[in-house]
Structures are given as C-alpha cells and as structure tokens.
Image 1 (spheres, helix red, strand yellow):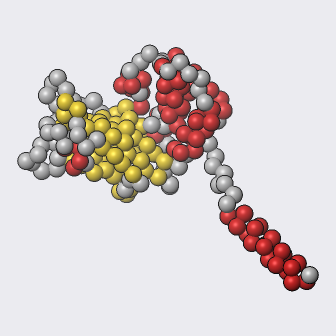
Image 2 (cartoon, rainbow, N blue to C red; image 1 turned 135 degrees about the vertical axis):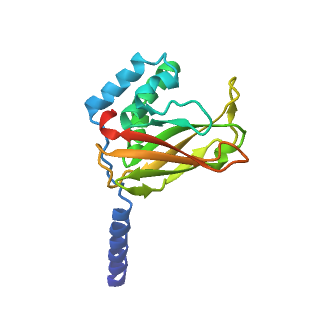
Length: 203
C-alpha cells in the first residue's frame, strides 16, 4: 500500500512539472481593442481599393526601373485592416480568432512585403536582405521571393515576396532601413536597393 502511494505521489509530481512546461506563453497584443476596431473599420471603408492603393501610406520606394523596387511595412494595424478588407471582398464575417492569431504572429516581428524589378525571369532567386538599425545589420528570420517573376507590359520582370525580422531592441519610433541586394541583370554584378522607414510615422 505504501509503495503504491509513493508511486502515485511521484506521478503527481511529474504531472505538475510537465504540465507547467506546457502552459501557453502569454503574448501581449500589439494593438488595443480600440485600435483593432479602427483597423477593421479602415479595411471596410477602403475594401474597393487595390492592394497597391490600400497600402500606399505604408509603402516606400516608387522608382520603377531595373535594380529598384518598393517595400510595404505590414504593421499590426495594416495586418488587421487587410484581413477586414479580405472579409468584405469575400462577403464573410471577420473571424476575431484569426485577427488575434495574426496579431500574435507579428507582435515580435517587423514584416515587409517587397517588390523588386529586374530583366530576367529568375532574378528574384538572387535576392538577399538585411535590416539596418543604429549602425547594425540585422539578418532576417525568414524571407521568400517568387522563384519566377511576373512579366509586365513595360518589359519589366517583377519578383514579389516577404521578409521578416525580429523587432527585439528596436523601439516603435526607430528609423530603420531595409536593404535588398540582388542581380537585376543576369550578366552583371549585384545591385543594392534600400528602403528607409521612420516607424513613428506608420499606424
């Protein structure tokens, strides 16, 4: 009997120990409830706009030429607004669980949508990125560029993708620079293209 009690006691300790490890980490949302509601309303009011028009106030870089591009800073506010716009387009009710999940996903990240211009179909595969802040180069935690570009009527190739960085030690009012290095011409050297953002000026 005593041996059985000791075994049960041991199992209880194990359960408590491993149970604590499995507790979900509490992540503070980067927007208040009021800001979330404002973003949802922004998405509804501007749902008829194209992605380019909708994200204009979060976009840097408009030089339409080889070796150039543009970058959209996907802030938590814009992320929610885009979800709201998408729900309106599909005539669906916005799922707040998806909104909360999306906000938790970007809470500790700086997230960009990027478009680069080159003159051959696979130039996007040559792209590399880093973030410059306070004299330091920060490498991305992930990035993706389309392996094959889109061909425009102006004979440009456009490669699109996204880049993510951890925002550790980067304050919300920081001035940062996203740098893209790629080969817009297949038979020439790499070129450097940069996009400067003052985070204090973006919702």
